[in-house]
Length: 357
Picture 1 (cartoon, rainbow, N blue to C red):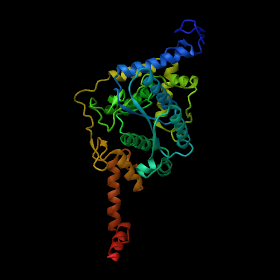
Picture 2 (tube, rainbow, N blue to C red):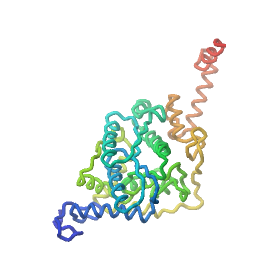
Picture 3 (cartoon, one colour):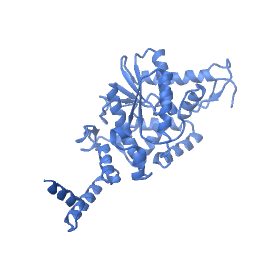
Picture 4 (tube, helix red, strand yellow):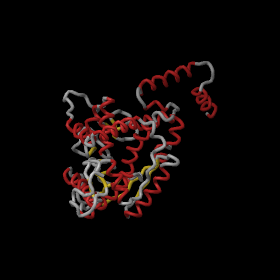
């Protein structure tokens, strides 16, 4: 602790912590006030909400969504936003992780007195994440989870008839996403990943079923942890058992190293991403409607439907990477199978139908 005097109240109370964002000593009360004030200023400046709207808080039981739910309820009452807040949780079906974290969400519902709805991957897609990992292994499992979770949140939001979904994405998450999209050369996602609201009528890059907003966009992850700790909030802190091998983990480690050298690195990356301009001649994906499920997609068939098709057909890589190549391989196998003199699966089905007739 470089100083025992709080820089905000100037000695009225002793400093209890150093703010990661500013490297300045703060007492707990002044830290709470600064943290809440900055989120309120973000909400007001970016016009995230309108009076009378119903907002679904994406609740996982982790520190980010727990702090988001607590602070939104607090600010809604303090500043008279006039919002109707509800909790929306997605059960991916990860034994030993999501089942435990959902117990935290249920306690949060009682603590904050907010309605709660829980949807499962199993009921929506016919597959749980445990079953998906058994089928695809741990290399690409986060791709399935990310695609399914996004669509599941929209479906849950539609059930609740909400106006917006508020997610707990913090500054660290956004900085990581910017670097990931740069390294992957994903111009479309790079253009919109810094947007604090996506999917609304003003967003030309993405037409979502329900608009999403990020009230914690400028809040550091370390400060969220400090806030939850000193406020004694009830949250689940165990990491997903399938995420250690995720690509994002490598980027997260790099961001943490940068933060140690220069605490402002996280905000600097976000501001840099906000200033990026895509050339008018750059071709970006055109949003359309999935031919199968009517969900928004940049392709005739959305990613979720492709992934489900691959799982159901025993070809889990169908929706990952070169989708068209796997489709051709499937067709070649089917053609080769049907041209064989032996009874293939297709011929057996035809014979069964003939016998029944």
